[in-house]
Amino acid sequence: MCRMTHRRRLLTCGTVAALAVLALPHVASAYGPGGGQGAVEPDVSGDADGKGVLSATAGAVVFDRSKNGTGRSAGPVTSAGNNWAPPACHYAPKYTPTQLKAHLEPIREAGPTGHEWDAEQRDRYVIGKPYKDFNKDKTGEGYWWDSYVAPGRAGNPDALDCTKDTFWVDTDDDPPADIPQAITPQVPAELAYNEIRTPGTEVALAPEGTTKVNLPTWAWLDGAEFKPVSVTASVPLLNIEATAEPISLKIDPSTEDSETYPASGVCEIGNGKIGEPYAEGKSEETPPCGVKYLHSSGNGSYPLTASVTWKISWTGTGVNEVQDLPDGEFGAEQSVIVQEIQTVNR
Image (cartoon, rainbow, N blue to C red; front, side):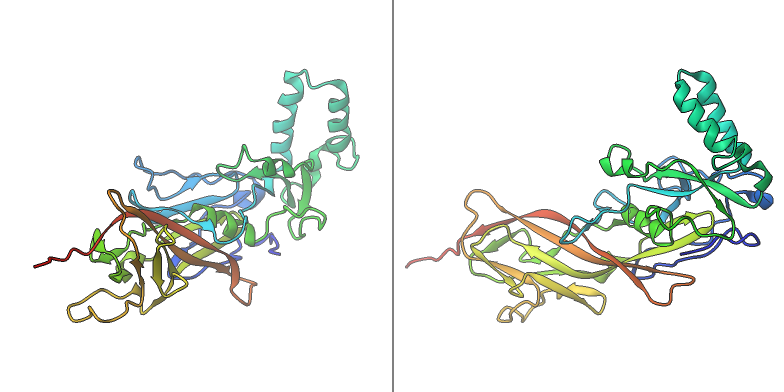
């Protein structure tokens, strides 16, 4: 758990490192700049084509996507082999005493909120059950925490899990232990996971495009396809890096009438590349990564799917060891025409 310190309001809590990176550089923004004068969201902007430096989303979380994967073939990873997803909502500092009062009073005045709701709000925040006058006497000593919904998750049922009323946390205290959705260093890392865009995975094939029945087809991905990509998830008070590193390529020929190399269809990365390019003189060799089709595709083609698995992890200040997040996958289909080998009878 990262604690907010009064003397240093922007605390580096985590860094995620790897080849394809979810990076979190130090962002000069914080809740309550100027020693608690106001809990504001960072003043950030992006450029017109969406590749911008910073964009303010999910309330307290700011994403820097300037080093993310780009291009039409780039896309988001999905967790490999399970239904894991980053949190749909979380709690983090949101209001100073003055700001909470300014937020709640117009709601009551606009009506009709009902007498019961008005009485509950007055009891809780004004007359001391448990807070008095919005905790104005603690201005500069802490913040009101409230819920934030992650980008793109507003319609997700899990976004409704954060149902607790706005609560106060002193600057030097951790949030209450009975609130599992309270922000920790891992939360921005998980949100950054959701923002990663990795390069497309169209593999090079030899023969290219059209192959023959029972002919081993070599498949490979050049290391240049895996330039580091990164997304920064920065929170005032927290600054986290998450990293995605390609570790393997899975070949799915989409037909049982085939064999893959290796038999598992999973080609591990080595020396910055996956598989090995075909070269003259290798026709009698077994490809380290590839496929062999046992029947022709007739008048059509087989949709070969190539999916890269990315290892995603994070670490940071106060974290002694790298913390793993679920592996992510991103893949694409490409068409392969398989023809019968023609013979000439004399």
